[in-house]
Image (cartoon, rainbow, N blue to C red; front, side):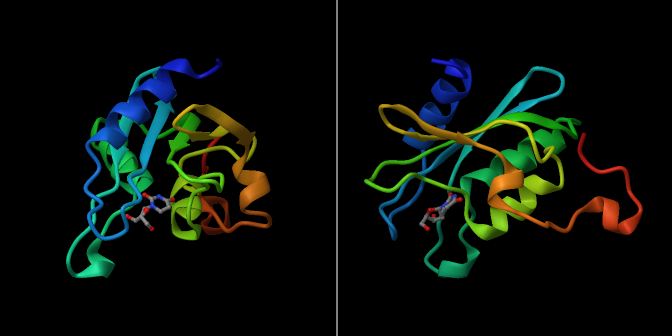
Length: 136
Ligand code: THU
């Protein structure tokens, strides 16, 4: 399977998800331009809006490590529907990930579909709108 390391990292992160309210544990793994993989899980909260998606946690880890560019990403969750990043996380990824970089959507058994942010977030707003270089 392509992106084996991303799948393994996201699956391991998902095992530690804190999702007692939704019972929907999610893992996300990001490959930075430096080749390192950053993985994280969703972290819910009794005050529901304070919960954090797996992608947001992984982006926080990546940025904190000094990386600014995602070259490949993977999200894993269970259920009959393909786990696709929520709208907010699409925008979060947009900040650091090129529109044509591979984004894998996986179930516990493996990758179900590979897409791009360009497909998930057409006509998106990004750093370029504010005169910044943006993700490459
Ligand atoms: N969730 C993620 O972690 N990533 C997504 O992109 C979709 C939703 C989490 C948030 C919440 O903890 C649970 O899944 C149910 O919405």
